[in-house]
Amino acid sequence: MFKNHLKIAWRSLKKQPFFTFLNTFGLAIGIAGGILISLYIYDELSYDTMFADANRIHRIHADIKFGGEDRKFAVTPAPMAEVAQNDFSEVELAMRFRT
Image 1 (tube, rainbow, N blue to C red):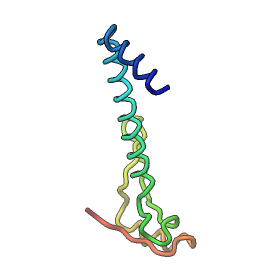
Image 2 (image 1 turned 180 degrees about the horizontal axis):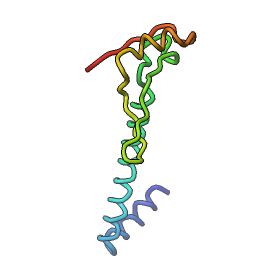
Image 3 (image 1 turned 45 degrees about the horizontal axis):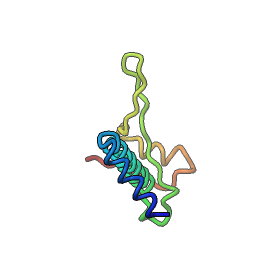
């Protein structure tokens, strides 16, 4: 059966080389795109997994409106960590870092 598929592929390549190349190229691009998307998703879902309580780590971000457009920034005021720890009983530990 595999031999038959190879024969048909060879005939197709001989009769219509451009379309065979185009189909093969499209398949290769599709597979490469799928692999890249999978790697991106894996990378995004693997942050902070080295910590034992990774599901308890959260990040505060600010929603700011600029010209009627909502934007999210991972920047908060300096006293935010202390206020979050004092005002919310759910917050066990808070820190602020700057890069």
